[in-house]
Image (cartoon, rainbow, N blue to C red):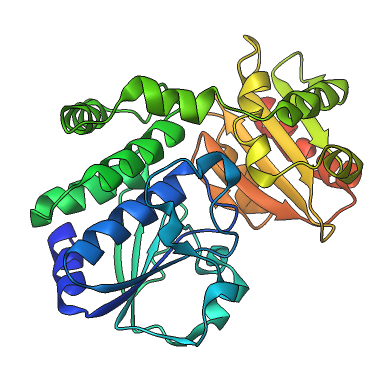
Length: 325
């Protein structure tokens, strides 16, 4: 695995750079991509920030996100010296449409914090103990002594804050708080960005939560909580992908719950599974890996074949085996 200095030097040698992140991007995916895209642009690089699904509505308030393009926005195939892929545990998670836009992707640099990342890049920096890719991006910028403006600071904060549960998850370290402190000293308004991130949800999110609670299943003597979001509910309320971010924490917060699972029926019939655990002894990353997914010990996900009820039975069967030892 390369060092941050080696990653930085490779980026400096490039004239044209594509910056990618995973499908259904969260705050860390968008925040990391915009922050580093902004920095590289300031260094005089020709930068294309690309995401298959674009910027979620809930993150449109972040400065600089207009630089994020979808594949359909490009007028011609991409030819770049370097493709930098961020916060993406597997190459396929960037999306088929994204990869189809390249005529030449150049050197592939893989920068991530997922322990399941196999190191698929030509150059790789994978810090599995980092709580967010945003923290790695900050460390890279500091290592290279690159400029860090307001756009980059706010986007790095959004990435770290969302992936640490507002600095609450066990992966949060003293260094994470030190990074946060430096961002605040640089001008990040914690109250303002926190309100935008966590207190500005659309009303339909509450309606979805109401429907999900009707589907709530408690099993394994209260140690497992799960619920299912079916296509009919999504269509009825016009649910957007970002509307469901963080909803799993509602059931994860129950005192007896060790593992929480969220099943969501996708438009193509596949079932998106998100799993959260309160202890490394109940490793949801390993459970998701059984079904072709991956992630961290305490937060992971996968996609399964439907129908949703059958997928839930299969997945929860594996969860029960872990809970029961």
